[in-house]
Image 1 (cartoon, rainbow, N blue to C red):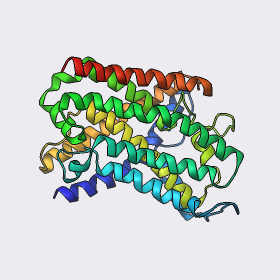
Image 2: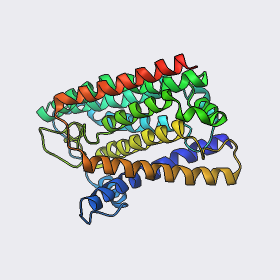
Image 3: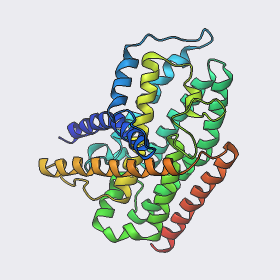
Image 4: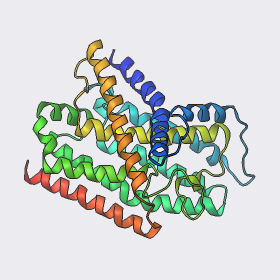
Length: 312
């Protein structure tokens, strides 16, 4: 039953990811007094891309073809290791903090390589910027979650959720609050959101994620976009279930699982509203200011670890 639920969790995440992005786009449009596309528009985009022909540069190698599959597979693998609906689950034994961080970094690394492979100026520019962001963001993810791991006594994500449910008061501790702030900032950076990147623009001087995938089309572009949307869902789930784990099922009873699904959807929608409001109220930072913002998140994560260690 546990393995069936693991597969069901992945299917649910894959199904929700486009809808979450569509909801954020729709909310931003409404906040800007625009009608906007409906929240289910990303599903149509995926369907259209999977049906389109693949057009490739003559300079692209096998790496260009291989990267979309690896990026998508590594992102899906992260979902298997996360406490999405219930905890504990069979794959929790390997659902370690470091495994999750390195799987996320693996996808980022190959996306940067794929951006460099065709030899275009924009691809190289986007890959360089992506590595600059990842160099600070990835350690911050590890530190922020490690701050929670100190209190739980384990770097296992499922164990962190279980321990937080057993001691709800820890949610308002300084370590948890600092780690949440750090991970929220990193979420905006890692998923290409404002003020770090603008997901709605194709202006060459400001692109990071879009610059790396300019040469992709058809099913390759569909897999990369779906993986990017799934990555946003992963970070939202980490924010929701590690810091506010209420609703996560501790048994495999059907009633508990239905409550877990409802709680997850509500948490994702609430975080989507927050991100939509933030992106409506802030402007994109200059590229040279982005490391300063990420450095702030790193310091917050470091303070979270220090606080958790001293107050343990």
